[in-house]
Image (cartoon, rainbow, N blue to C red; front, side, top):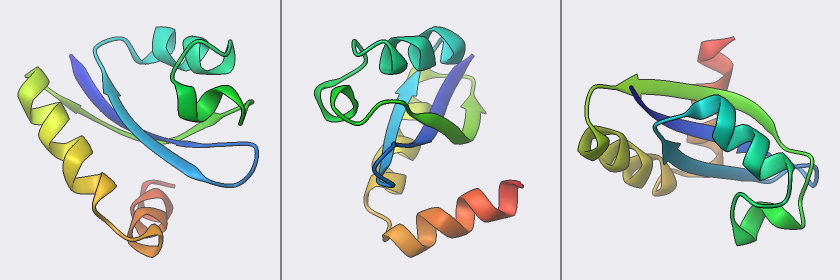
Length: 81
């Protein structure tokens, strides 16, 4: 499985990414080894994810979410809960 996910950082910002191992990737982000953006914003919390069959689908969805406004991202998160 491939996942597109949104994290909420300790400073309240949102980060969007993709992975094929969601649990491991979340541990990496919280361990300061995920990516440059989240390194200084730990801890992070997984607030949204979708799963896809292919890497390409997950990456396409990541790109689409990154182009959304913060309000639209928050609506995605709210609809999941």
